[in-house]
Figure (cartoon, helix red, strand yellow):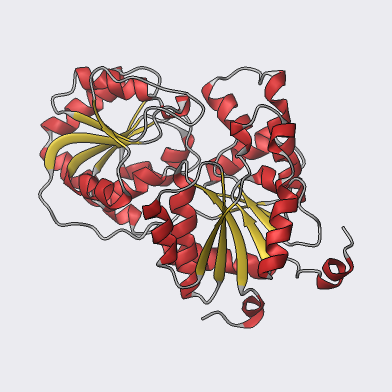
Amino acid sequence: MLHGPLTRVRRVLMTLDAVGGVWRYAVDLARSLDALGIETLLVGFGPPPSAAERAEVEAIDGASLCWVDVPLDWMCASAADYGDPGATLAALAGEWDVDLLHLNLPSQAATLPREWPALVVSHSCLATWWSTVRGDALPQSLRWQVDLTQRGFDRGDAVVAPSRSHAEAIRHCYGGLAAIAVIENGAAIVAETVPKEPFVLAAGRWWDEGKNASTLDASALGSPWPALMAGPLRGPNGQSVRLGNAKECGTLPTAELHRLMARASIFASPSLYEPFGLAVLEAAAQGCALILADIPTFRELWRDAALFAGPRGSIEFTARIARLTADPDLRERLSEAARRRAAQFTLSRQAQAFAELYGSLPSRNRSQLLSGVS
């Protein structure tokens, strides 16, 4: 249980979506905050969750789930389509009598009334994605998203990134930001003791160009072992990718994906853009030997616990896969190194870091709320 100044934080409104990794992040964090005596109202945006996902939240004593009819910013054609999520969030915050808001999409804070303490977490953003993946100027038609994200960063009482690399990318794309706190993601995975099998596994939202599905699919052609790719090939806005060499596994429930990771000897991620990479952490916890794209985030988090390959082009990935399939001793060393590194990224450490940050935020201005001042 928390003591001292942290005890005033008892209820947190946390936003999430059911499209990508933010669901896993938010639900696991809510469960860990519950253990610290902090209740969480999870407020969902965008396409609704499945019945199984809703049941997962219902199983957490200190968490509730509310889904609102508000889209995610990247699913909108304009700022007018996005509307005013801040007003929706403020109304829910008042109804549920929360102490602060934890917003997992910075643009959600852009129009939030000042009376509510809020921290914003950048799991990814259009400006940093575009700079990394496309490498050219952002089209004027998309500038509104970046402007709203900037306003959300400026509005937040704290800004959080899941890695130092992503924090630096944010600073590069958005000027004038105050200090960015780095709180790495965590995972609570029970490693399964099953025999490893000769196949390569990858997992991601493959419709996202930044996940770089084509590189891994091409490397599968020359791989001595089968390559399996778990995750959706079609996105909510019609984005899609086709596989020609790797085996498509589709979207798997979390428990099933973890069982597949436990069996896989090698886990590969060719991502061009990855602010953290939760799937890599999950695979490492299951003892997979890692082959990762040589990008700053993966170097930061997995340095000497993985093999690295240039992500643009399949030649290096094919070579790393061939090397690991032919060297069982190296696979075993990398497997153990990955397990040890994964053990550092605990949910309890993540939750404690957020609880301490919550306690450092300004107190809610109840007098202004009651008087209706904005």
